[in-house]
Length: 226
Image (tube, rainbow, N blue to C red; front, side, top):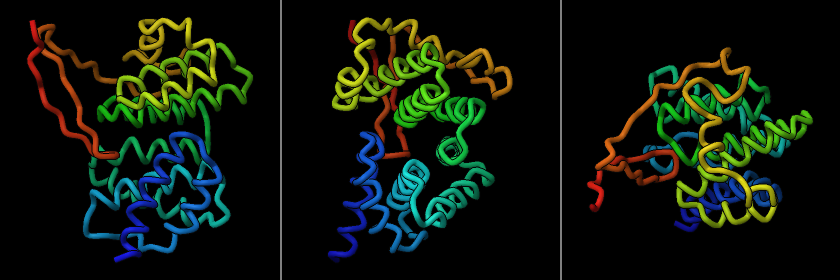
């Protein structure tokens, strides 16, 4: 029983560690979670655990490369089977494993297609960090700004606050400009090489709210109060 609790609590801890960029905690959790099987009958527990194990393994360049590869293979199989939830995770892992503009943009497109706002925020953030390394500061700041608003809209207000402390330019950032960066026509000038994003529209009298359970989501339509 205690081993199961350690596994489940570890899955939440590694998710938070990845979101907040705590490399030490990611490594510590990978040491623990990598000892558990990569299969489990409860997919609602297995899916988020392997998701953030894989992302963390590539983020910290974990010593045991097999860990990241096993997680990547799991989501690759689900993606080939047509899973909408698995595709953005798989493409995100690929971008973390071998970063490039096209890899990150394809991952962003997939998160928008699957309406996984939390993953969209994370991919944008890591894309921004990658662009910083490429000395593309203007575009990097635009990506980080868009990531900030996605985190905020998801409800990760502590993460959004952390970003305002890290990136002071966010205080003067326009939401409209930041959100328009990742439009259906693509997120940068190079987006013509990546997949197009299907636009969705919501009636002005209704709003759509999402309830997230890690990488799974449920959608409900709620009437706006007049």
